[in-house]
Image (cartoon, rainbow, N blue to C red):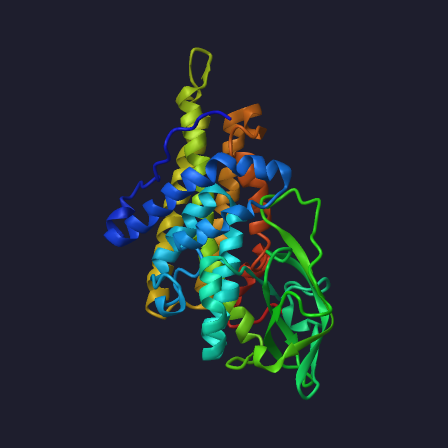
Length: 393
C-alpha cells in the first residue's frame, strides 16, 4: 500500500467555526481511532470480501454504537450533529463499516429505545452499545423493497407466543447478529416490530456472497420458519409503517453525513495525486480540466456539509422532517458517487488499484445510493412534499 498523508478535512467555508469544541473533539477522537485500527486493514478485508468483526468491541468502546442513545442505557448521550460527525469519519474509511454502525445505532437501538418497554431497553441496549450483541433490521423482502407496506412476512397470536413466518433480504449484519428487529404483519394486517433472537428455532440467517459492493460488510437473509417469538419481544409503542420509517429517517440522516466522508476521502486523494503527478513537464493539477474537476468536487462537498449541518440542527430541535432528511441523503450520496467517479479519472489507471481507496468508495456508494430508500424514491418524496401530490399511487 502507498503511504497516504495524514487526513485533513476539507473546510472551504470554515464550517468548523459552526461546530462546538465538543463536536470537533468527537470527530477527532473517531478519526484517530479509525486511522489506527481500520485504515491499515480495510483494503485487505474488502479484497477478501470479509467483515472485520474483530473490530466490534473496539468500536463499542469508542462509542460508535448508539451515540445518541441516553447514557443510562449505555449510549453516548450525544446530539445528532455529534452522531453525524462520527458517521462521516467512519464512512471516510469505508461505507461497509459505517453501514454496520448505522444499522446497530439507528435501526436496532433506536426502535428499542423509542418503541420498546423499559424491560426491553434494560435488557438489550447496554449490550448493543458495547457491541457484545450486534443487531440487524428486517424490513426489505425479496419482492418488496421500495414498497415495504406490501410485505408478506407475518405472525399469528398463538396464546403464549407469536408464530412468525416469512423472509427478509439484503440485511446488513445478519450473518453474525444476535438479534433482529423484524417488521411483520399481524392477523389484522397491521405492521408491528418484533425482537427475534438468534437461537430461536426456525430462525436462520444465510449469508449473501458475490457482492461487488460493501465487501467489508456482512449481508444476509433472515428466514423465519414457524419461529416462536415470546410475547414480551413485541415492540408495543408503535403501529404501522411509522415504526420502520422513523428508523429509516435516523439511518438516512447518518448516511447524509457518512457520504460526505467518502466524498472527502476521494477528493483529498485526487487533489494530492494531481499535485504530484507530472505529465508534459508539469503537475496535472495545473491543467484546466483537472482544476475544473477538483473545483467542482470541493464546491459540492461544501454544499453537502451545509445541508447536513442544517438538517442536524433541525433534528436536534425536533424539526427535521422525513422529506428534509430524504433530500440530504439523496443529494449527498449523489455528489459523493460523482466525486468518486471523477477522482478515479484524475488518478487514471492507478484509480482502479487497491493502493488508493477510490474504487472501493465508488463501488460501495453504488449500494449506498440504493439502500435506505433508492435515489429515485427520495426524489419522489421531495416531489410529494412540495406538490402535495402522491406519485407512488
